[in-house]
Length: 244
Image (tube, rainbow, N blue to C red; front, side, top):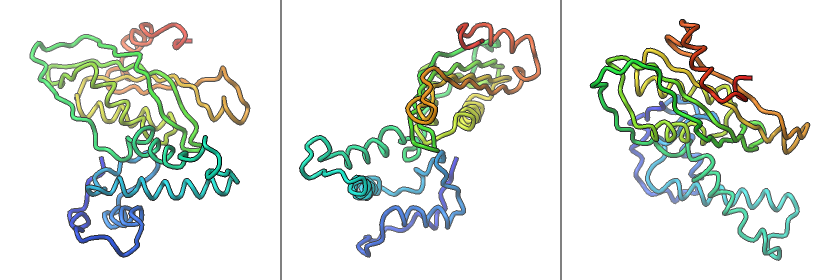
């Protein structure tokens, strides 16, 4: 997870110098030598009140896009407020995983020393491809093999973690790895397995326009990687269409 540079976060003086808020945030990230790719979370580098300023900035730039598309937003009642709606959608909904901190997850010790396979899913996931910003909609399944030291988290918390990771412009292969890293860090299990199946609208809506295509990928960690029987057990318990 990105950690802020304390020196870069002490800037509290009023910003009336005309410098866009996106520039200020980007300067903090660069000063801390932190990456800010499309699928990175940058919440630690956004100061209180700046998300609303960023919303205003994105609204202005989205309006410029609509103007360049030769859409008369002044007289077209359907697009009059589209720039603001799109800006709000990006910052506070579909890409919120970039701009908000990780959800609070309560962890409990494995008091009963559970060590049996647990599967959570299907969890509905919604993301967007970072190539075209087209939706990626699908489901994922999470398999956990706990040990006596594993932290236990509520079932709904897996969905919250998935939503936070997927709420960024992504490619599916990297998104699943990011989610696996996060769950591994939170729970410390003996094994972790994730399978994701999704429809990519950059193929369904544009390009080849194939409505039936889907992508399935998996990440296997720990005993799922080493034990073929456990891996087969996990995969056999998934819906048949995912196994194919």
